[in-house]
Image 1 (tube, chains in turn orange, purple):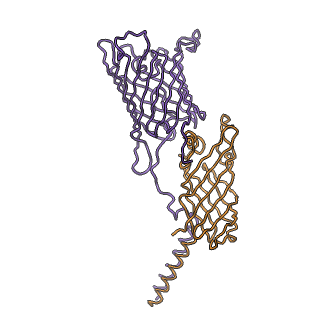
Image 2 (tube, rainbow over the protein chains, first blue to last red):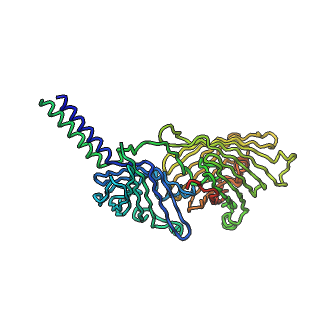
Image 3 (cartoon, chains in turn blue, red):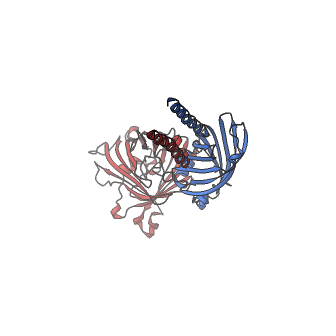
Length: 184
Length: 292
């Protein structure tokens, strides 16, 4: 009876352990975005992105506090929060998706793997399907996930007043760079 | 044994369902939703309500160039083109944000050829989350120096006046902000029988109509008011266009610094003796953040 119990416990623990190693996360991921317009280039950086990747299923999720974006100019940051992204109403941006070619990524072997990502991006209270590519770099027990894609402000119901048309582009280049560690 | 079987079943099934649930929102695993202290900003569109200082501070490294302009009284009618013919008065000012909580500024008004300077310090910053203050409290200390040669004075010190102000304000919602402004104004010289110290209580607020436009009201009740002097009241719109904030308003205060509008406002709203005025604020970022 005792033997049975300990065997059972061992099974449970191993399964838990395996479970834990499937998931990788960070709370200090980076997201940058930039807008190139005739009169002004705008860049902002957020270094407090929460991200999690389930290597078993390829599921990925990101969450970012809009107020955490830092701009070189203070006024830009205020206008970003106040006038465009309305971060009091919509404090977070989120992505929920899946690495569609997850079976091609060998998380146990060091290397750089191309990834195709499909999912839903929520910004400014609007959710849109997006499809993008990225890379998964495996180094030992660490995963570096990067991706670059473009979002259109008009897709997310963010209006550009005609007065600032020359200063703000509708095409925003988003760069994601997250160094993930095993979730214990 | 039967009990054991059920127990086993539970132990196996429960974690499985749990794991499935986690799949839906993986972020919960890493405690994504911790509540952090977050400062409340953008209580006003600029560092002034209309006449008065607002609880809004300039960010570090921001230079704010302010052009304040008041036309003649509207009651002049069509002959004076409702005050646009003048006589107009103007104050040019430069404010600078030294740190998040300290700003200072200088200005010069045409009225009495007056120079003024102030120091503004935020003691408390409204925030949300744990251990946060429900209001912002800002202290302002300033002085004015009248350089005109028309007013009769005996000593250089007679040209000076000083003011101390506390701004206690709260951004109640995304659209509504209100602040109270107890104020002491000390004039080095006054007419016989008048107090050197003028005590006043002010109230200022704004209501946002759209993301970029708000209605502002700015009023002072002067406690030991001198005969013939009125309480200053300004009502207007803030229009923000990116780098500029335009404050278009009506006011009965001709003077554009604290001494002038508290102690020398003679026009009366009820007689239509108000003037159209505008403030233009243009912010320049002199020092950019290094970390970026």
